[in-house]
View 1: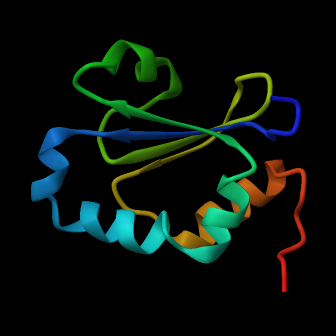
View 2 (view 1 turned 90 degrees about the vertical axis):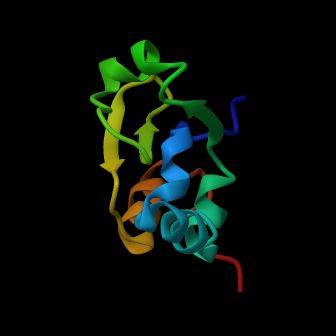
Amino acid sequence: DRKKGGVLLWVYGAEDADKPGARAIQQQVLLHEHVRFYGRQLACVKLDLATHASTVEPFGVTASPALVVLDRKGKVVKVYEEAFSPRKVAATLKKLAPRRKLPR
């Protein structure tokens, strides 16, 4: 899609349900208003680490949960593993988003 500014790849594992930080990442990072605004402007893909380990390995993902941000050409912009803040993720996504100004 030409309107998309890149790819946001969400890598998860079945064992993440037992990790105390995994639920917080889903509820606090992925649902943060800025992450959602900028994330909607990227193509979003969700992959199970156990099933797609060989797919995400070239991006440097070794653990889950993880977020991989790719530019339009598929080049890795940033990899966030296990613990990350909504502010940092939003800042990375903003760099790729076609619309950078937040709505009022």
